[in-house]
Amino acid sequence: MKKILLFVGLFVGISIGSNAIEPNHVSNHSATHIVNLDGSWELSGFSPDNSKNVSLNGTVPGYVHPDLQRAGLIPDPFWRNQAEQCQWPENWEWRYKKVFEVPENFSQKWVMLQFDGLDTYAKIILNGKQLGTTNDMFIPYEFDISGWLKPGKNVLEVRFSPPVKMVEDKVKKRSYEAAFDPTGNRVYTRRMQCTYGWDWVNRFVSMGIWKPCRIVSYSNARIDDIFAYTKKITKGSADLQLELATTVCDKEAKKVKLFITDPDGKIVWEKSTAIDSSLMKFEAKVNNPRLWWPNGAGEHPLYHVTAVLSDDQGKELHHYTIETGIRTVTIEEIPDQDKK
Image 1 (tube, one colour):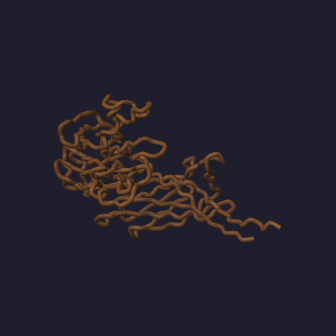
Image 2: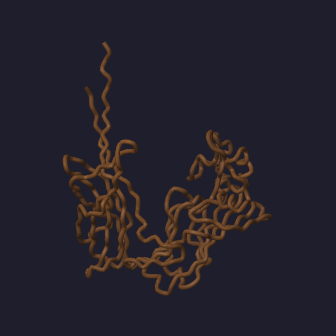
Image 3: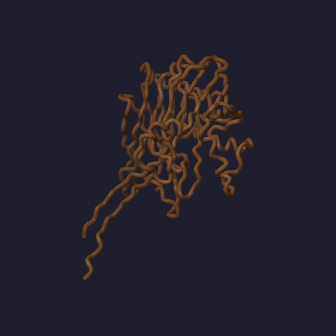
């Protein structure tokens, strides 16, 4: 009998927004200042020939189509054949605009504008200066705005170009058809493919700031990411590997402390050490772990992994937390027995 075992460590990389605050309010936590940009934005649309335009309230995170429906500019796209009346926004240019204020003491050594998700082709403009462009719905973007953010009033714009327009030159050169999309637009754009129409959904090529966004001011260091996965589970314990990515300016951040808390908030593992590289790896053992189960097979207990950066005097510079489930999965490939 042939048996192949494949061990897969389960990980759930969900960052916890411990600094989440109301829009236009500033969080001063552990030397990190945050302005949450979610909420109400001004939304403007411009027709392809600029002969028409609309202005309405936009919601972030969100999309153009739901905002248009709330404003009464398109009908309910999920009622009967009304989806056909909701196709025109894909050919328009859409601009999100937000006016916000920051206090005098907000900007520190390092200020970043962060977007968790933009769909898709956008220009980012702060106080009249273009910071950069985007072309992928699925990845986060951030821009260094140190020196460009000013105390008091600031104006941020995100200008979206129609995806169909951005790839029209490539479409003209193609020599094949795309499934469920005779125009062939979708294969050239890094965004949700089914929005171009599929056998189960109408065509809705929308645009929008579809995930949260914020401005973060760091004193001189930050934790970029924590990755955790289960290496091995034995009777009474679980071995985890943690990977910590950091960015440190001016070398002021000297120490890092990591700790794991169980679903009840009890610390079950911790370690403090000096920062010796931008990517550090740690082995952690959790005794008597509460295992994560798939839906329908059991409970889904989640552990929290937290990292804290500090200077020589113990002043906290930045912290970051993720959730993770403890579990390994074994796949057995067992050939069928030969029939006699």
